[in-house]
Image (cartoon, rainbow, N blue to C red; front, top):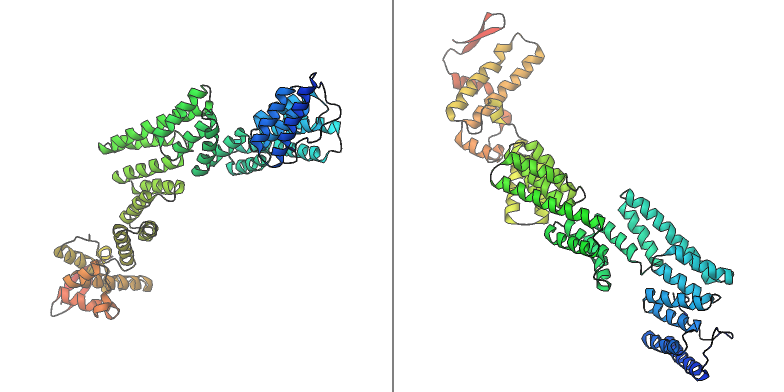
Length: 494
């Protein structure tokens, strides 16, 4: 930029249309020289003032406009600089530096095609001009980045669009269009602070910029601040009533807010079927709104858990954490569903995630409970072996043992294959083991609490199921199974 904005300290020998008044000409030259001095000291504001005085004295001198254009470029005021550069080449079409500055301004503002034309004209006047050659390449590079970005935006490859816009902005730092496209893609990628920063920078310079207002609203919308987002969309539409993206976003935001609120109301009223339908409809409004959709999935998962559709609830919560892997509420809801479906390893994993994120006493206790249930699940399930509920009474446990012990007693299967006999003997032993634990209040309490039974000398490895059977059924003469027909046996005491 410095090269392009270099002042014309030496005046051309043949300047067009010098002032008629020689005194005015000399005074203009004096102002120009003072401007040059301030420019050399990088005091661009004072340089601008003196170049303006020179122009006022001699308004048809191309180099004065060229110098002021260079100063405005250094001040970052490219649009004003463009006007001066264009005026300089209107006054003198052979002014190479004027064409270079015009091209540089066009390029800085993002008009790469116009920039190419200016640099081409400079090369026509001086085909060996190295700066013109380089700037022409830069302008063509920007054109290529624009094409790639347009294609990738359609493909929703927002990361690549951001990359292209970053490269293009190296040559076009004052292009609001490129900045807005980058900010919009950053918002789509969930990089909201970066997107907000870009949009805010533009709004500081132009508070009525509809595109920047739209991006601000988009960030708020995707952060689930829907009411504030609508305000920005409405403001953008005031500035540009035909702003299609702001119109669509505003409509989606209002619809999403209404559906979500209706779903919440139905849930609070206990109308879970309606709540499910409303949350489902809300999820279909805008698949790009990741944060809001994560909450909707979690809400629908809560509805499914109320409806005892636990697998569906787990699926909804899984979708929620896929969209937002920091969503603690979704992990907690899914973990509870895992507990309810006895998927304890999965529950422990979710509770560990929650506790690592928020180390509260409540989360610690939930994790501890899940770990205990997981430990208990890896032992033999004595309730399942006897076929009774965990809240079964003493009589129910005895009845269940009587039924299962007779069903699996080895004598009953003495005529079966060796494989069947082995399997039935194993089941008979497990039934006796289960009864030994569940019929003893102390052992049952320890078992239910997840404690290791072996800790108090209750080693089940030396367990004898026959002794339990004899003790239960009693009788001095023992017992036997006798056939009463093909496949039928009855139990008889001796």
